[in-house]
Image 1: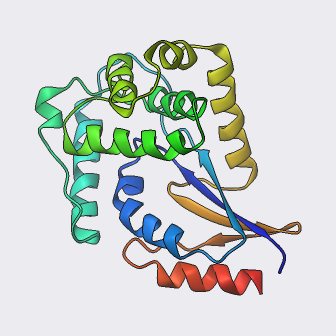
Image 2 (image 1 turned 90 degrees about the horizontal axis):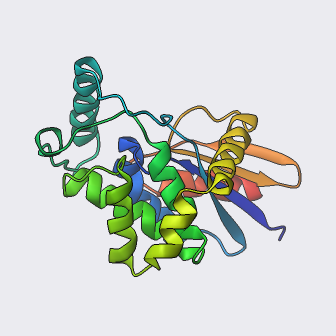
Length: 207
């Protein structure tokens, strides 16, 4: 049977991606043999040193509440809003995933998980370079290599290239899933609570 690729588009500071993570893992554990997974960063919010506005804070907090209502078992630590100085900037966290990936492909997913845990469970700010370096050390990555890679032009260019690729695929929301095979492509409908409907669509696409 012809091999196919499943593209997963996400941002490590996307709250819906965090909400989807448990069901996504279930989907990954059930994928048919021969389906390759490609992870792409969508880049939710560009670099910024500006404090998050009150309106944006309110919007994000409301989003967390909607996710808790929509996806049973998902809970956020709202201490983040008191303990941190939020900024609307997810590019640093995206670059951290790329920098981690440089030390082994498996670290892409592991860094994403660490950022989820830090941001949503431990009230730490992944928009801060210091937090990202702490996470890398906790993962057992080489601190100097990671710190250097986090700041390179090449890492930023890799992020921009992935963002442009995501846009060329017509993806404009996170998380997103797309199947590709022999020049054909199809968006997989995200189900935040059940892997089975997505698995059925993937199998039907492969034929």
